[in-house]
Amino acid sequence: MTPLLIPRRRLMTAAAATGLTAATGLAAAPGGRPAHAATTATDQVAGWYRRRVGDAIVTVASDGWLDLQPISLLGTNAPEDELVALLDANFLPTDRAVGYINVTHVQIGGRSVLIDAGGGVNSGFEALGRLADTLALAGIEAASVDTIVLTHAHPDHSFGILDDAVTGLRFPNADYALAAAEHDFWTAEETLATAPAEIQGMVQGIAATLQAVAERTRFFAPGDEVVPGLTAIDTGGHTPGHVSYRIADGDAQLVVVGDAAVHPIISLTHPDWSFAFDMDGAAAAASRRRLLDLLAADRIPALAYHFPFPGIGHVAADGAVWRWVAEPFDWTP
Ligand SMILES: [Zn+2]
Image (cartoon, rainbow, N blue to C red; front, side):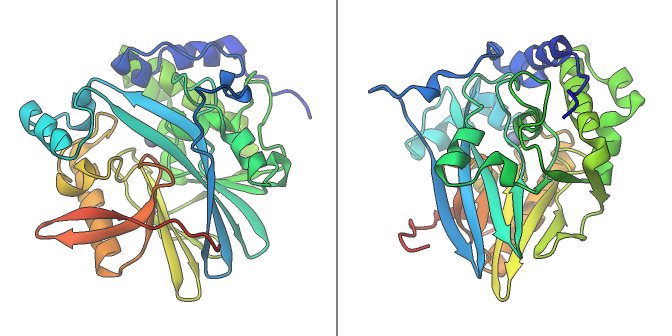
């Protein structure tokens, strides 16, 4: 394959300068393979998990985790004492949060589909980049993936499209699908021109990643059936073209939430609190409420990208808000 002509330095610089990195103060990944390849007594592995949706086979594969701090990232418009009290009441740390990276693979109708691509080692978060290894452990080789659909293009969801060296494609045989609104936003000259300085690197990195696969990408509108059995649901607000995906086979369904909800306590009990990376807080909150309402009313199980691994459970109505009920482990998928 012809090497992609993406200057490595540009992407590395982009990763180092992402708004995420700047906001969290984390160092960018060193660019090499993370140490997870070696097993030591102190290694931890979220791994993979398998569940059926009708005849479709869903595999959740971990790309690693994000260290989110300060804690105010979880609710930029939240009174900090309320946020801290809520986390403490739920036996969670009050100074930082873990964002899990639960990537969904679905075998449906003869297709091998990945929903999001993880962040790889160049996203600006140092504990990412495990996806290809985790998929291989689950028996899914990168070369067997034929379609990659994105919920949105933030680095922790899209930078895993490219390999560690940023010179080739991690999934060499895949075609891509992305909401047209998402592609148009990140690749518009105006977006870069008007972006605050601290996120210009991120914008450039996303645009370069999307452009690297542009000839392999199909663009869709929310509501479209993107792959047979896989329909995009409009959950714009986190980013302009953010979508969630409904996987359906017969009566069986599972909704892959993406970043429409990012925390099992905060997103469900305080849906109007903005996540720091919600680009339009009001629109994100409205989408979150609409999606949570749908999941609760129709009793559809959900798979959330940043919830504790594997991120599968039910959304239950609880007065005017919701609560998360993790699904028990399935030993007989
Ligand atoms: Zn995310």
